[in-house]
Length: 92
Image (cartoon, rainbow, N blue to C red; front, side, top):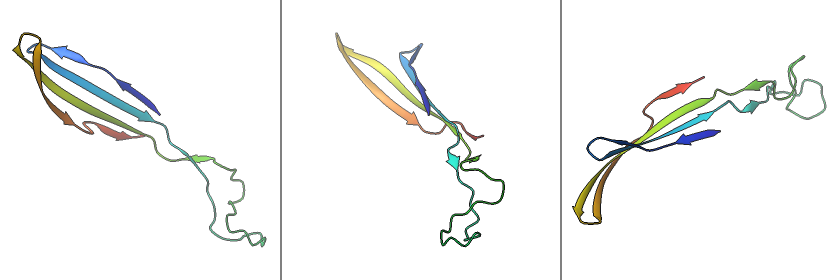
C-alpha cells in the first residue's frame, strides 16, 4: 500500500489537504473446493494452477480535507474544517 498526503494553501486562507491511497491486489489461492486426490484435505487446486497465481483487484482512494483559517486576534486563529472521503474511486 502507498499513501501520499500534502497541504496546499489557496487564496483566501483556504487549505486543501488531499490524501491518496493506492494498493495492488492481494495474492489469491484458487482451489476446487473438494478433495480431488482423496487425501482428506479439501483445498486441492485445479490441474496446472500454482499457489497464489491469482490476485484480487487493487484500489485507489482519494480523501480531501478543506479548512478555512480566520485570524481572530493577534496570534489567535480559528479554523473551520470540512472533509470529503472517497472523492475518486477506481478498481484495477
